[in-house]
Image (cartoon, rainbow, N blue to C red; front, side, top):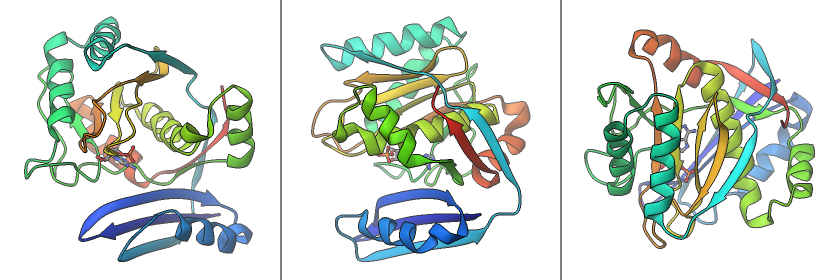
Length: 244
Ligand code: AMP
C-alpha cells in the first residue's frame, strides 16, 4: 500500500490538501486525480510513501444532520451536545470564538487543528500557527462509500467534503480525541460538524456566516496522553472499511 498526500499553495497560502491510502497499482490514477483537485495553484507538493504498518477501522462514525435558522442556534446546539459529554459551556464558547475569529495567533486560519484541554480550555498544540495535521487516513473503497452516501441522499455539492471530513473525524475518535468541532475556511461553505464517540458525526448548518474566510478544527484531548495522541493522528496509517 502507498500513502499519497497532496498540498497546494497560491500566493504563499495553503489552498488545497488531500490524503489517500491506496494499493500501489492505483498510484498513477490517484496522482492524476489529486493533481486536478486545486482549481488554481502556483505550487503543488505530492508525497508518496510506502506503508509499513496499516491499521483498519471496521466502521465509520454514524452520520446525522441538523439544519438551523442561524449560526446562533447552531452554536447553542453545539454547546448543548458537548455539555452532555461533560464539556462546560465556557470551554465550548472559547472554542467557537477561536474558530469564528481565526485560530492562528498571527491572524487567520491554521493548517491543522487546535488541541484543547476540555477542563481548562488551554491550547495544547506545540505550534499554534501550524496545529496538528491529521494525515494517512482513507477509505478501503472510496468509490463505494461515495455511492452509498449518494443513496442516502447526500447531494453532490457536499459529497467530496463529507467523505474526507468523516474519515478524519473517524480517525480522530479512534486515536482518542474526546470531541471535535469543525467548519471549513471556504467562504462559501457553511456546513460544519461536531464528532464524538458518544454522539457520532453530526453535520450542522450553518456553523458560520456566509462569505467569511475563517474556520478550523478544535480537538478536545486529554493532556496526559498528548504525545501518543499526536503520534496517532499524524503518523499512524489507517483505512476505514465501511460506512456505519
Ligand atoms: P477544510 O475543511 O479543508 O476547509 O479545513 C478547515 C480547517 O481545518 C483548516 O483551516 C485547518 O485549520 C483544519 N484542517 C484541514 N485539514 C486538516 C487535517 N488534515 N488535520 C487537521 N486539521 C485540518
